[in-house]
Length: 378
Image (cartoon, rainbow, N blue to C red; front, side, top):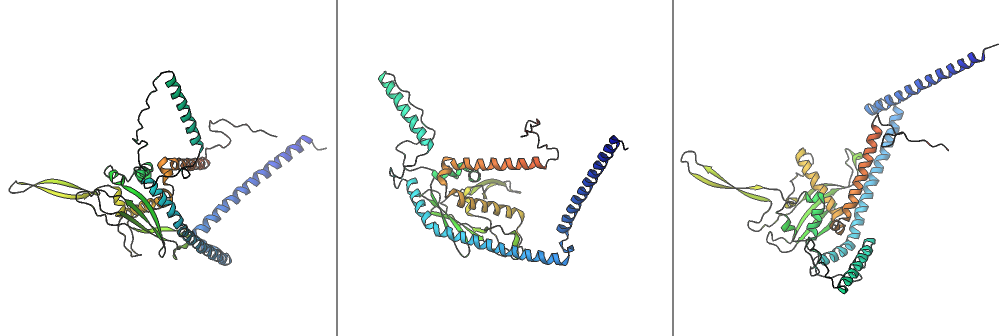
């Protein structure tokens, strides 16, 4: 009669061996799969002819999808043009309020939020306390004057656009001290959409000032919404391909984009000195209207430095169009900035999670304090 303990031990050994063999086969399968993927990526031509035909068919479908995507973005642009006339009506009303051309009616100011209700409560409480102080013969303390210097006699909203620019990091980086007195005269920014070729203009409107005679400074951006025939699968939607500024008619000695340097030079033989005046460029927001020139020759290669300048310029133009002009009041109050900070925080958290998952030492069963989490079974 067989020994039950030996039989049980043999079964256990056989099970462990089978398990180990299964793991080895699984590891080999995984290794084989990785090798296959690498081979396909490095040399897709090594695939069987029948599979290569199918991949060509799939790529043709992908090209068709890309072309449909381009048509979609063109229709989106057409919708923007269609609704632009309605937007212009709102922008004009905004301009009138900002520049004290009209005073909004009570109905137009009827916009209540939670914060407004809290402010009303605080105001009523202050009024009650002041009345009580007067009754008791006490003198109410005068509140300190606000730092902005505005009062009930202030007309419109002074320096609205300058404040928006100061609040937005992307634009604040462009501002210099010598730019701010000029931007205090900025009364409006408008968007104009263009077709054939697709594009848009940013019109900066200024009140009369001592710096230049232009009433409007314009920046034009041309866009492309067509897949590149040589590399169609890189298409990700409309992209800015070129931009054009305008000539600023500076008044005498008021050009803030340059500075005058005076140098003394000594004559080699006579030893006499003379003063040489030289004009050199300097940083200014108004260089925005004098972007780097780019050749229309499609085959010309753009150097890295020029490409970086153009990329930054395109980013600024796109941001003003998409964010600043439509949501200007929210950037003035800082509410739009809070939303953007929140988005950045969420993106940062996602990146941190991805890094942890990629870390070979990361143990997902432990919490942030490194403690083993309890597993509750039902």
